[in-house]
Image (cartoon, rainbow, N blue to C red; front, side, top):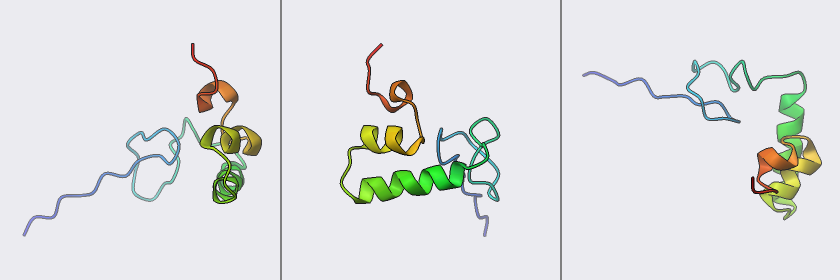
Length: 69
């Protein structure tokens, strides 16, 4: 039986990455895991995605979609 390998995506930009990674090289920076954990905690507290992303440092307001360009 052939088993197709599952695609694995970056947790931030959704780019295809190796299975042993969480973040692609373009998105990874020191502290990304802490920023993501804070982002998730703010979501759990009821903040909107945009507010949680900007408050945690996960994304800047433009990346988070706060402003339409």
